[in-house]
Length: 294
Image (tube, rainbow, N blue to C red):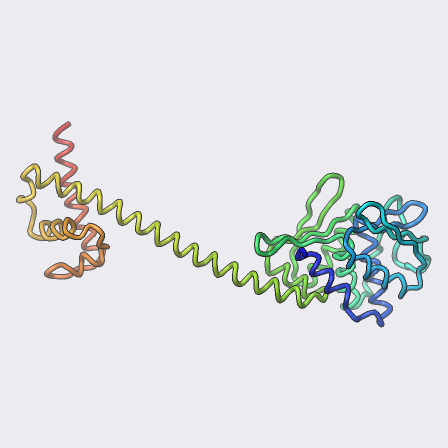
């Protein structure tokens, strides 16, 4: 079962149908999404059985008579335009929601839940973070987006193949949205996956950083050893100061050592910057040998 279906299964079983006003707004949430079409009658279609089960309960609770049938893989519910949807209007091929300032918090959450159930989906959190709700009407989308903002949830708009979608990409926002609509079990699962995923990403970043630093150390050591060998081959090595000779010999004997480790090996230990300075001087002298050959 997909993560989207798990969420919708949980929401379909919520035992909160005694509050008539919340039921009303959840039903409206369904109706204002892309999967609802308005012709002579209202049609809602979905492939998800949990979706249709919840929608049936809402219609029954509101006393709306309907007909249900299968059309291919889709459940299709058809019913006459209800007269008791006081802040909705039936347009050509969609239901328009007329926003009101009198909605309570529980009603807004119910509206958001219905919208998600109506045409929402969530990608598998182990792969990527993406939640979207599809609409056929921009005004309805903007109303839902504004309600999301009340809960500090940031959603963006996407135009796709004649329809528009409201989508969320941030893991924290998706988690907050799931909690907001009552999918607490799915939210906990999402958070568990998100924590594990981010921990793995942090480990990978640390490993990649360490590998990069190791490669940088190896490359630098290789160039230093080449310069030292050139100095010895050209008999210029004996002209170096005692400090430069000492660090050069240590580098030849310890090609894998870090600058800090080399500094600790000196008779008079110095820090990383001191070792780096001495090796740079050795390499500069070695480069002069190459320049003189040109």
